[in-house]
View 1 (cartoon, rainbow, N blue to C red):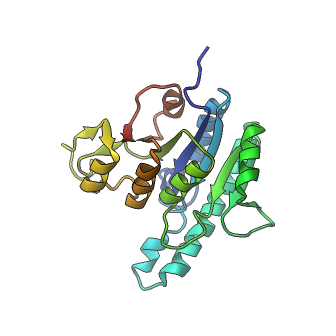
View 2 (view 1 turned 90 degrees about the horizontal axis):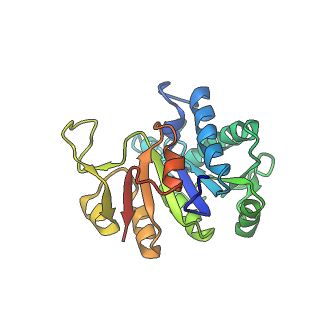
Length: 238
């Protein structure tokens, strides 16, 4: 019988991961695939919280570059994460996984407000919790929100799902000779300014000794392998 190494995890999904090859929006095939991956670790008895980005719909930092006010742009990005979270909730519940969306901004008609004790209670009752709208504050990425929520709910590890196999010493899309990094310290990641994860998020994880794993979401079964202790992707620790 396969056993999980962790009791409670946070899985961070980028918005871009949900659009697949479409270039924009949510791919039905990808959202179904993500739900299956989450279900595979849910069946192991793992308590799962998800944090979803919104870059497939709207990126606040990109909008601010063409003269939109950054705070307004970031709030639009937060709403994009809510859209993704609701789509993911629907896909998970179609797989028989009870799911609750909690948002850092008040949208009572579509989701619960973020309340820490309620979130933990949902996890203890075997429900997946999706944290939407980032931290509720502009200028903070959903990576930072994922680390913050992981600390608040006392998750044992944060898994960051990406389109690449992990962290490299340079951009593997641009440089075909980029070297894969299997293990790296928080401080090394900060010094090298590796762009796979937000620097503020890495700093916060370092301050609280939260282990991070950056891995390729498209590798079927990768989430389950990591949860069961296999070395997939790049591990960032002290």
